[in-house]
Image 1 (cartoon, helix red, strand yellow):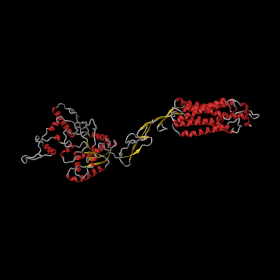
Image 2 (cartoon, helix red, strand yellow):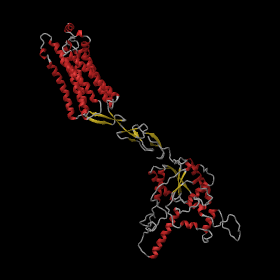
Image 3 (cartoon, helix red, strand yellow):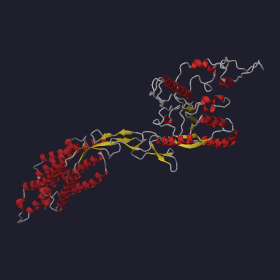
Image 4 (cartoon, helix red, strand yellow):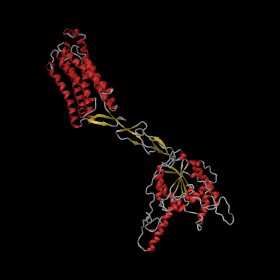
Length: 633
């Protein structure tokens, strides 16, 4: 019957139910009712409704708490059995968490339900806490002839109704109705008696009756639930059907067109009815629920910050609320799964929204950056002061005895070591990233080469004093300069290869810190970075060994003891640097590297030059040639 290709002249008296299915789902989703009771007529129509409606409900996340199949009271003998079944169904409704009941069926279904509810065997007070939704097939206007039935429980119910339209002349027609003028219409008199509680009596039998119908009663004064002056959707559908039939007969009789299949004088197309062109919900107030939209859910709504977890053996509408895992959020209620924030965002404490990450780098404004910068400049000025002392007392025996030129070179590069640490503080840029590790590696290598050269010079000087020694030809600045140049050039070569192949560059680290985007210098090649550190460690280890084996040479020539301590400090700092550096994240990696640079450089400065400054400034009597010769003996 619904296939219009076979029934081209079929006119549907009621709309296609697919529109009602959509309307039901839209209504339930609008109020977020996802746990409902379904009451259907126990016949083929009810089963067809379930077959079509359940998949649509499931697709939209709506579950039936239970499905009640109801029977219609056709004969009075069926009343006892039906009452038991209805009583059980209504008790299940009262106990259910579902606060929404959808009733699908015909008008006689509602009559059966009303008869049971009016039997007073049901505590209908508890049913007032439910929201009733009626299908479009139920016509409340047809219940007016059953005036004794109590409809109070359905006050505020939501009902679907077929499309209606105001018919010109319909109101005047209703106002003009008079039971005494409609002699051939017995229905009007029966309706009049039911509506106004009066009766039409035979005047030949009894004349003075107080409740007799006068015909002056007004339909407009009847309460709305009992009688409406406007045309209902069902009546309008009948009106359209009659109108369509009349037009069809008129077309056939007038033989205007034997092939005309469409007419639209009332906006209707043959076989096609399009109700609910604009589906919307007016402002609905739930008075029985204190003007708050009632909930109809299997369980409470999962708040933002949680996600749904299915309960085993329960419908998918029933679930537990589980806190989102660390690092994930659920910004909305009742989310199936938590989401991961974008790389430049992180979850807030409640895990219900993503917050933009702040940019982070070691700056001069923060305590750590300021403290390291002050320490670097403090040691820088200490080194400048020591260099000034050595220049001022350059002709004294103690300065001459410890290779004055190498001391100057070492002090200058210690100055540069302290200054190079400032390249690691502040926002990383292309130039600072490109040169800071290179400068650090080369400057430190030159400083350690100077220390190694000092040790070798002491050994050569001592051996040259031995009778018949051939080491005199190695005496002088050439050997020291050659050692410094050779050792430093290897480190410079490593750095050049690094810059030529995989140079460092500014980068964003979005993963190390949960709430920060770390602005850092990407080393480009971790292997090259550790090659620079490894070569520097190799030079320090060689210097330590040479100083250790020369520590027993005469004191006048020898500062190997102090160099041994300085190299021991240097190696200890950088050995502990590697695990500490690898275990820290973000800007604290830079802090560890700067601290290691300052600590190792300060160790060299203190161990090698502080004892000499002590003699020069506080014990000048020891800074004489006679004293040095005396100590040698």
